[in-house]
Length: 286
Image 1 (cartoon, one colour):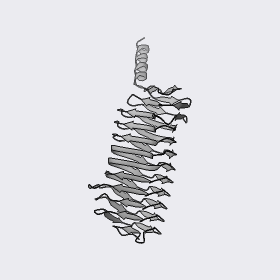
Image 2: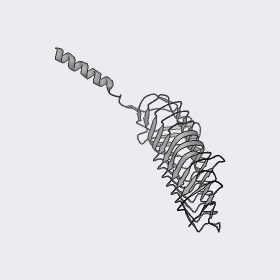
Image 3: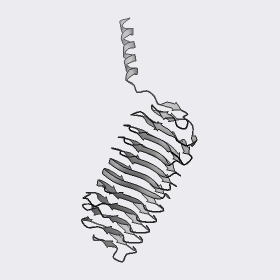
């Protein structure tokens, strides 16, 4: 009997220690998500989509779509920690995925299309946006403000109003993104500090390919980016203290690379066949 009792106690403790399985759910417009959830069906014609209201939650769209009526948020996370949103499509909202005043939030493997902004990260610490696709949004693919340790990596933005936008972002990386065919610019970050912009491709955007602006010392690194056939300058860096190294800029409407006062030349930059005869300003180009 003692052996049986001991076995049962161990089994109960093991079950208590195991994390609960994700709930399979057919949610509806405006529902709150309070636990790990896997969608089982599309959700359509929403004025407001889904609201994640607990810490530590993973919302897995499981290949399904949440679609809206050009109002509200598709998926909203506010004041939360350690949330993941993954694996599906959100389309036709004012903001497809809105993250605010939160930390350690990951958005991955998503398609965010046909709204105003694809994703917004406002007041977010350690936010990650990765392996996602943005198209048909009339404002930015993604917009971050007052964010720290932001990671935007491995995404594709095509035919939006603009690509990736940031204001007052401190720390993090913007890397390995493909941004082409935006109506206006590919990327504009203003007043960023200590952000690494590397190995991004900006092609055939209507305005500037990428622009890093600001008056204060930025300490940003702009490395191994490619700007090709953008309507204005390929790469503009005005923030003093930033370093430009090993970037390439071809066939852009203005300068290939335009560096402002106080921007550091890390060498290895290339620019050819751009609209401005000098090809580069403020740094040396081959």
